[in-house]
Image (cartoon, rainbow, N blue to C red):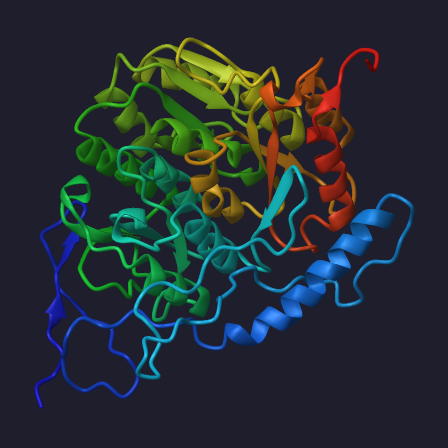
Length: 442
């Protein structure tokens, strides 16, 4: 029986190369296009997740009063598989059965994510692209290495419209199970917007898709980010409206750039604390009239780097806060023409994550480019919202005078399991996002 043939693959900056097509266990020859199957073993999680959700509700009631937490200290992955529909012949119908259902939701918050970035990225991708019909599936996905947070943040520009390519986490050799399961449901096929690519893979990570894979060569992190920026220019058919320079050494200050890149399509490139890498400078010189925004304080990216960037490219402005929490809020509040979220009033979505987990910024990026679009906010503790973040959310808390159905609403996506942000902090965020009555009761 013949061996499986190669699938098409193109390099972002090199000649096309071939990569063997992944084979299912036991398969020895190519056959018809694979059937999209239910997630293996996922049904076993449902009963446990229901119990956890009930436990979360109890904790939400007693949250803030010193109530007990789960002894396990770990919430299960939030990718659930509803029971497969029977096609009448004992076999399940084709179609996705794994959706990014939340592990726990309140009236104003939704938790999405798992105990690692791969599970989080899979859950977010399936929440943003339910994939019930072909129209709901992404044209392609981007696969980044689980150890490469800079590539993940740089790839977030491809999440923005019109491309809308979610980010999944992979590794050399074999993709994590959560990624493979998500790909089975997402089923990207490529199209004109992605120039035929079903996946963009950074470096040598496994890309188990049926279709063309465009690879971005690995290398120094600034070089990889510049390659992704140039790929963005080719796919979008022109230069960006703005360029963001983020810290290559302090991921907690770079993370908010991922959400903005997903919202705007602005590329994110990197700098060290005291010098501008050559690939970053080269990309800036390619776009001399594009405004540049440096994200982070001078202790993270020095004024010398800002001057180098100004000499290489367009006008440079700094957006910053003195710590990661304040830095994320600064970008959420910032407005300069078409750049910045300008979220200074009620009626917005927000994404909340821990700053110790930088790859979650890339994993969560699709939530800033669909649904309740909104900035990434950062917490520095699992149990309690930072005081500055609480103050900001209180400042933009929605209210109404006489008709709540005509009011603006806030919504917070909580990213990760309870080890990252526990239910007490989620309850705080829910309270601050809750619509409030303004003025005396009638």
